[in-house]
Image 1: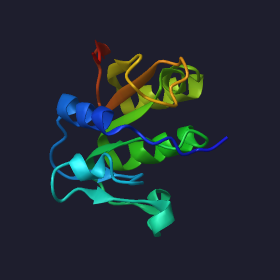
Image 2: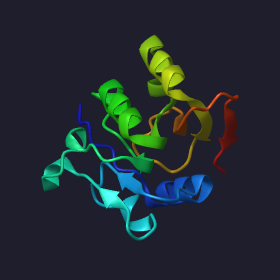
Image 3: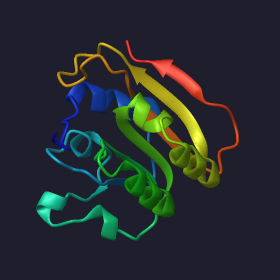
Length: 150
């Protein structure tokens, strides 16, 4: 199974418009640039296939926004939590909810501030699974806001 799932441009644009990242922003999985090309000018990027390994990035950022690799998601999220104040990842809902370790890591960081749910959103590889843009925020101590893409 491939760890590469390209995000449709309309979904990346919706994530950016919905969450409105500001300050220093990093796209750790630039890929073909669907997030990067639509994020504000000056956004930093990593892409392993282009010689920039996110797991070696150590500089603090205000926001991380991307579609992460699923096979190493927990390690990826933990590294993200070391360097960012806000993290938005587009991924299957179950990647956010199916592991006590992810919940524990989330609570230590702050918490999940919001989930933007994408159901039947014109995503070729969705295959019946609900997808979401999950927003973690450092120090968050409130509830989880849930919205739906339409």
